Length: 231
Image 1 (cartoon, one colour):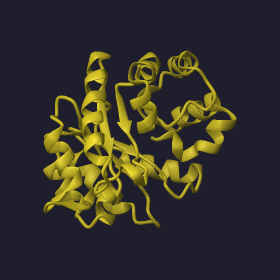
Image 2 (cartoon, helix red, strand yellow):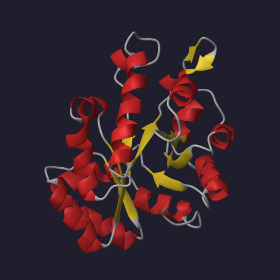
Image 3 (cartoon, rainbow, N blue to C red):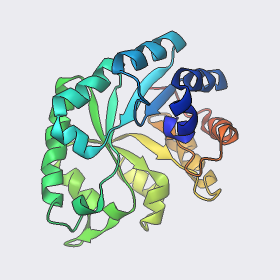
Image 4 (cartoon, rainbow, N blue to C red):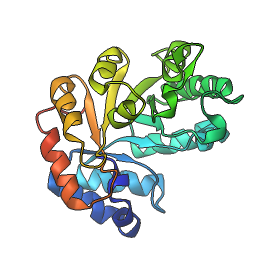
């Protein structure tokens, strides 16, 4: 589960939040910030609780400014994956900066590989803007090889972008290892059908976008049971 789902609790008490997630039955977490702790402290918390720090969402510009330093911190924690989580408007498809984003993503993928990690890209809807007749997300994956970039497909945003999540996930299977299941206005059940079908080979990372509290974390865990273990 993404710790972002319970971010207020994590900010107040990260160890306690991780402990509660473990007790609920989650084997792994995806970070989005370290909530004031050092990488070493976060690593030790995860080890003490026997919970896997599977992945992390790390701001794009932070990684570009200091690739080795920033990515090295998540290597210290023990993350297997690091995701480009979001592009601010000035870097999105259709802007002059987007070609440079593609080059930087390839560079970050190389750094991740050297550190023994895998770079992911987490989409929203704006990557389904068409450039020369192709989705920008498809262009990204055409220009950056799978050896440098895997996908963390967000099924909710695929739907918002105008594509059927199940069909697009099928298209992405050769590259995708993780995908995000979100809960938009209570419509998350369709996404769980996808996790049940494909989860034996891929890992679902659940997030409660509406931040409706711990009950929703439990509901998501129930929906994700039977999808297979962590990679």
